[in-house]
Image (cartoon, rainbow, N blue to C red; front, side):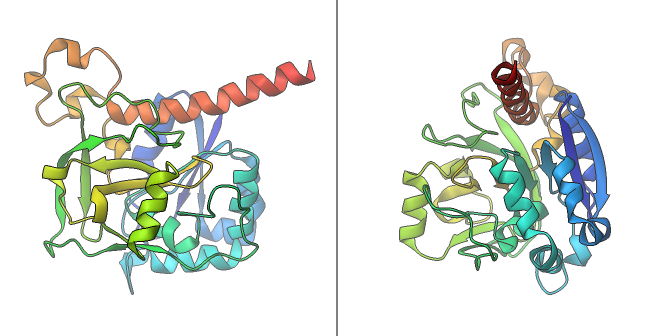
Length: 273
């Protein structure tokens, strides 16, 4: 069974939801506090999947995710790169996205380039919402056809009720320039978008989430781990029964990643048999 590592820290408060999401998708989970990982980064080697949960790590002092990302840059960046090179999918919702960007995992090197030995400086940011308010609601979602993201590729968002919950105060996606946004789009690194008429925070290009060039690392502002059952949908009782026949959107994302890991494991077994 695939094993998912959930990384916790002071102020992280969505770890239990992430635990449940991985378990509902067919993986087992184990948690490690950031202090444990700083003492022994090799714990990351035990993981087949990794989750950076949402919350308010270290109270979002200085800036959202800044302190936790700084600690991780100093002590375990190389271990994350090692995990990616062996094909470990990683998901970073909300505060996790803010951390992953400042850690240097997203957007990562361009296709064909290798990871740098030292963490790269951030080229995108999650800035304060253009409303200057914390937003807590559900929004529509669009998946670009060319995305290479393991988590969101092939998701069906055409059904009525294709929505996902958000809860953040600093979620406005801002790339360093227009050329970077264009390149992310061309390279299939935009994993999901807000609908043009339902962009809640002013994100440039309606970007909701991005992935690295391998498609393994997904950072997104919504919380897919909060949409594992149709009864969590804000108006599920009004949705046509046909729309509720499959797995909810959030659960589909986690099942995609777990299936990716299981398929990779089966392929290895066949090669060595």
